[in-house]
Length: 251
Image (cartoon, rainbow, N blue to C red; front, side, top):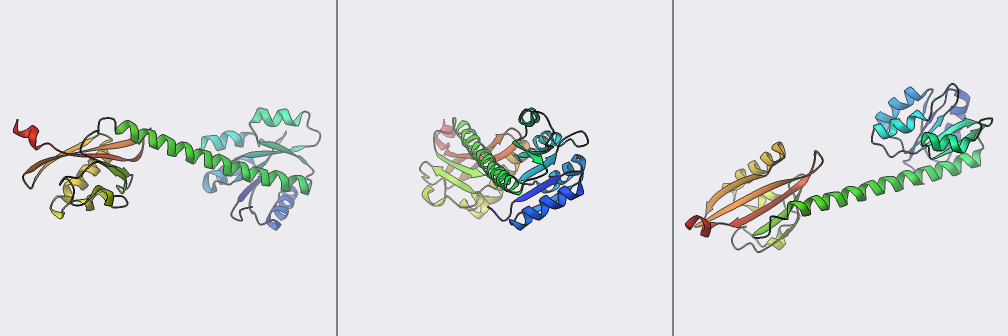
């Protein structure tokens, strides 16, 4: 169990909050408490807990925190704390979108088991989101590379650091492409043109559109196209294509 896991307990009954807090802190969890769903929602927005235990009944609306988590784009599971007299608690939990339910009065062994499962569920959901983002980012890079089939192609992260590269430099860069990974993109060029490439990155970042620059160097005419890679409105990185267009300019 990760020591850093944070559990949020929302219940209008102070004695129940205190009991759950004592049990979980003894197991090494960090515990935050709230006396209502409204105050719990504010804590969720501020601290992004790993798991929420929320009372649900006549005077409590713990089920609303499931929607609250979704609205905050959190993957935090919610376990409902419900009265033992509640009819069909499993259906109630499913209807609310909760991960599970725990009946009151709380049984220590059940509480500890459900919290372990809840934290594990949070880790699984978080891992899935990360993998989906990586896949989406890779797909976005591939789409951006469809028109970059000649010269040197560089894949940059959102900070303009080189992730990968391909092609043959043939004087386009001051080094072999195999040496580019892990380097800052502007650092690949002579100091005299560094500002041009920094400007192209800045323009693509600001406008969300491809930026183009043309430079004359060593008797060659070099073209650079910087394409921003977007996932929705979020910037994932850049695809940069460098090519020698000297022959085209002479025709």
